[in-house]
Amino acid sequence: MKRRFDERLENYDLTDARSKLEYNRRLFAVVAGRYDAVTTVLSFGRDRSWKRYLVGSLPESGVHEALDIACGTGDLTLAVADRYAGARVVGADLAEEMLARARRNRRRWAAARPEHSASVSFETVRFETGDMSDLAYENGRFDLVTAGYAFRNAPDLSAALRSVFRVLRPRGTLAILDFSHAARPTAASLQIGLLRFWGRLWGKLLHDNPEVYGYIAESLRRFPSLPALEEQLREVGFRRVRSRTFFFGLIAVTFARK
Ligand SMILES: C[S@@+](CC[C@H](N)C(=O)[O-])C[C@H]1O[C@@H](n2cnc3c(N)ncnc32)[C@H](O)[C@@H]1O
Image (tube, rainbow, N blue to C red):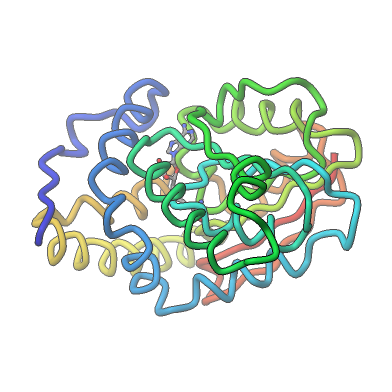
């Protein structure tokens, strides 16, 4: 069944933190039910392999506490929990509807791993409400922060990067997967134009509103190019910043250390 989304992007100001936060809250409440399937379709089935690359490139050891910001339905959160057996992993997201899906996925995940009892899995993997720009965790708590398609949605990117930096321990790792664009304006407008077409098509088909996934391109247009994002990470204090791009540069996986 089609779940309609009647909000108009023109009624929101994506350069205003409160307005962008509110748009995101409403958008993801509606797309939650189909998020996993739509992510597969929109990424031509590649999303899983990009996430596998991200998780496979993380440090071998030394991760006891991890945070997955904007965790959505929790696939990256659970992949991190698989990578570091026994680690405590928190998934934090703005939208309750996404968190409800994540908790359901965690039940399935726990059931498929009889070596963990469900109660242990629920203690070690938690899903909580949280705004990435204002994380309510103590300084230096996490060895690892992951961010799958997260920062593009940040109400205030600079505040979100500083917030993540604060909750990471010294030498802790940040790993980002997101849409990306080149610094050169011609290449960037081609990339964003393609994404705009593809997103709007699926928004129309699934929600009768091209803007639903057209938002991906709109948010990317306002997001720093990959070199600019890397520079911003360095300005916040991150070091050893490195990225790998996929899919004609439209996707980037970036790693940084505190
Ligand atoms: C595109 S989904 C990404 C979900 C998941 N991380 C993944 O890799 O598929 C973006 C998520 O960001 C969440 N979100 C948007 N704004 C947020 C904010 N300010 N703080 C935390 N989460 C936010 C949305 O609710 C949504 O679940």
